[in-house]
Length: 218
Image 1 (cartoon, rainbow, N blue to C red):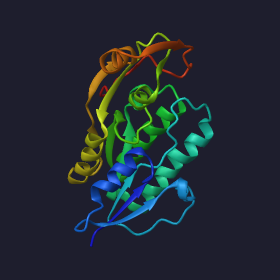
Image 2 (tube, helix red, strand yellow; image 1 turned 30 degrees about the horizontal axis):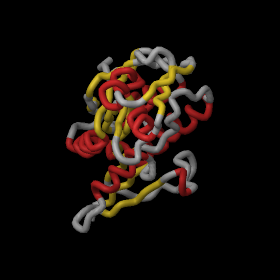
Image 3 (cartoon, rainbow, N blue to C red; image 1 turned 90 degrees about the vertical axis):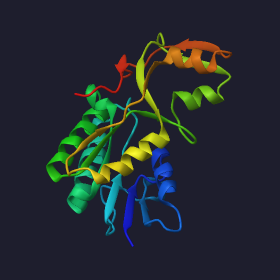
Image 4 (cartoon, rainbow, N blue to C red; image 1 turned 180 degrees about the vertical axis):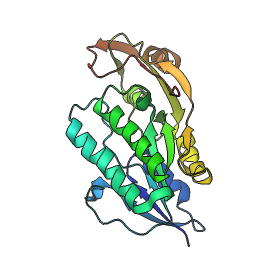
């Protein structure tokens, strides 16, 4: 039976990916997640046939570049050292705008994947059950809090599309880059299109919140 390892299997996309495999005729699943105390920087790495590498620090606004580099870059290199071209790496559309520690760490991860022959999947902003992005916040909030003028642009896709592309990446050649497309929307457009009946409050914008973060190919 094939063994599939998912790092970060208790994160948003990781949970959906795990569920997509978790069936009677599916592969043997193994998970590594910091929520269980397993740090990709130093934990034991099990044998597997394919590794979906989703574990990462994901706060795009974080200014702790050292910690971001240790986890997202060195941790990824460690995974690649162990599994080589059997790795599917979850990257981010943030690499198109490498002005933060997070974006640079994901861009470095892509370069190392090419070096080791891993499969790269560049994801945009995913939304769905259990998510924690703008859609999910707006869904539960009575008053929609919008940072800055609300004209910031991002690309959004359902989490099921992210899962599909991660799975399909295993069929492509080593070092391949696969880019998840979606719908380009501003925060204001999301508020008016999907939650137009709710009140809106504008607050100060974070300095690391880029204006245009759409999924654009470099």
